[in-house]
Image 1 (cartoon, rainbow, N blue to C red):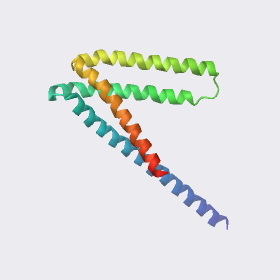
Image 2 (cartoon, helix red, strand yellow):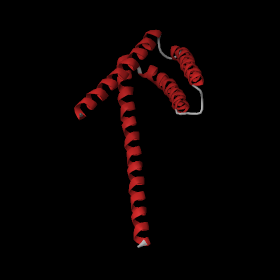
Image 3 (spheres, rainbow, N blue to C red):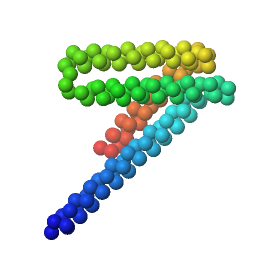
Image 4 (cartoon, rainbow, N blue to C red):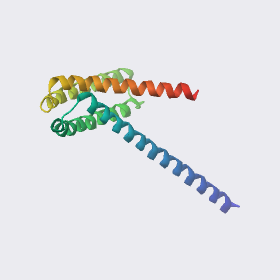
Length: 145
């Protein structure tokens, strides 16, 4: 009797673990798809020459990596329950400041590899891409309901 129960519990745990693993893999694949589409979108909008692209993408990839690290830290801090509302506000403002500093620093780095007009197009393209993703997500949510 105990053996059957133990076997069932192990099967359930195995199935749950497999499900979570598959979900995480699907999530990673989805993020990679989005990133691939984003790269194509930005490349098209900026009309990068091959020389510009060779210099631009490593800088942009580093920017994205640093930005994602900041955003991850921000999410972790937002989940903390042991700090006061005032401290949460201060932490949020500090993150906004760090993000702005990061953008200013990378604007200088971008200006070394692409002209200012293309930097402006980059900012516009990123905004357009975000807006497009949000519209797609909203459309899918409405279709699902």
